[in-house]
Length: 470
Image (tube, rainbow, N blue to C red; front, side, top):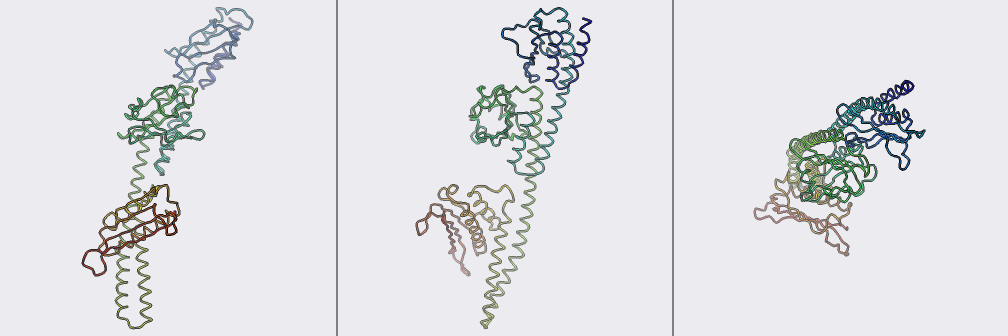
């Protein structure tokens, strides 16, 4: 024993030099093999989910090699695993002295593993806390809601060392749908994948409970068509102030190690922090949007109450002067001035309508853009124009034609707003129309019930038509 004491002390010192858990375990295994002259040494953990480890070993054993010596390793009061040896280099059996050396090494290994665990837990907590702080800062700095969800998914994927980070949100049908995904490579068809209503896992997810899955590909609770790509997974509620925003899922690739208890706890806390940040960011965006709306409304009212009325009054004065003026040159000049004033009033009214439009998160669809224009006009008209669509407007109308139609719609609404007695406006968009030469076309019709100048009876109305080829 005395001859082997220096190597034992050296091995003990070596075991305690590294704070990284896997490296510490590898030192233990290598030291055990070197001290006893074993051809094969391994350390098996009793609870792989505790540290994310299964087995640490030296070179793979020869076929048929049996374990002939093993000792337990305890970390405080916990049974961590077993250190076992097989096949000495010189072919002789292991001795009682070998077992004593191995037990001394096992005691020191338990201390080193405990320290490595504490260090690893502290380091993990630091990473997740920094990650949560970075997400909160990013979300509160502004941006769209969709970008905020992507930020959460991306940061969580990196922190969890997951194969993907995805966010699911409830659907109108009662299921859940992946609305954003972050992966190492192309997410492919991950976005849009759904968990159908009736799936067993939905009860927990919609109830705001975390779900931990050992193998996504084989777990019967998983029903998405992309489940076969993934193995261990965490599905964590994004819930804050009693509101379920969605679910953060962090699946690892098939065959990768399971999540540890510490990782599950830290990821759950991260999801709670991220959900709160999402709620705060949404509230901030709403406040900023409201402030912009209020400012735009004020500007629009000022333009309407001051500028338009003064221009209109000036135009009336010029028209009155024109009727009294006998000189042809003066009459031509007055006519030109009146036309200019009318044009200016129309442009100002168009600007007023534009100020009523949302400054951000504008509708991406053509139908939504048309409805946004009519909703903006309602702020000045005092009533909402009725809108009707005919045909597959989203798939048939081209971007150039859509832009021209929206411009024509703004002008038509601005013109209708200054006609006397307007109480109803009908807007129709028809993509089944045809030009005189037979080409497919989109037709815009804006019809109002304005009264004629001086008419005290029912409104004769005005109809404006615009069309363009598709």
